[in-house]
Image 1 (cartoon, rainbow, N blue to C red):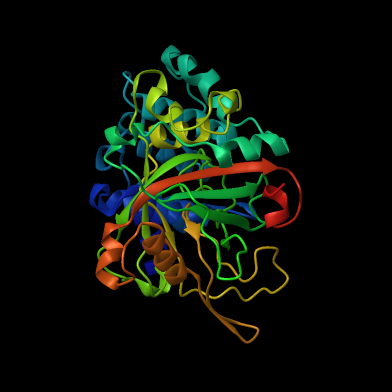
Image 2 (image 1 turned 135 degrees about the vertical axis):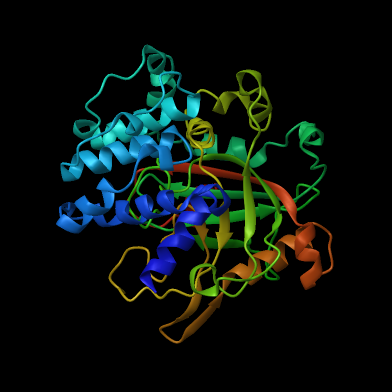
Length: 366
């Protein structure tokens, strides 16, 4: 069962169609070698890695990981295990990401072209604290409907406000297609807690790391509510990166110029260019059995945004379905299963500060 869970989690980050059997084997082994307890060394890991060649892997990003894994187990490297001399941006950023955590295991000289991405990478890691007025500026901003280039038009807008420490739940609020706040029947602002934490404790710039800050497109749902153990009993919303453009002008057009002085949106760019894929908003069938965890009753993901599900302390949660239904209403759609596929919108993900507590409405309301 644990092996099945790992393969499903890997497929959400790498894309199952792009992974060879050797790549899956490597990434399955990666989790065993690099655990929260440190680097684990076993003879069986040594033997498995010895049988994997860089020629068996789909690209240089995997070869970089193979190098780190082999060096951790003392497995000699072959010429085939090294990346090619002409690196893509994805390879360069992956190298910078891996070097930050496993620098001593990347003991080779990278091409000078890597340096051209170093500043961009460092800026994306800067931790920032937003002022109250900055939060209000974002919440009150309406893009000049340049969403047409993305095929959006007037669609719901979602905001996810988080802490720098993602072990604390974030908070989601929503505007409808006309730019009005979605509210409950009693007039209170509609909101839902969410978790954007990596189950491996990795930063946003690493595959399977926490959900990167930035701007996303919501583009429908997955066709089926399948793989229920991992993704829960309801259909998951698809999060897509803003396509690359010159000087990232398309992304920057979606939020106020006064907020472009912050670096929050750069996490999104690095994650996109490093090859992160298949981010979703979903629930889970997995159970959090630790009531003392700061994210209880959530279950962390491989980079997706988690909704509460299952029964805890006498309460049964259906947050994902409530989110889908609320989005349909906000989009002017009748609440029905087949209309879930018509859901589109825009999502902002922002770390507002470094407080050690869940985000609440009082943090974002004046």
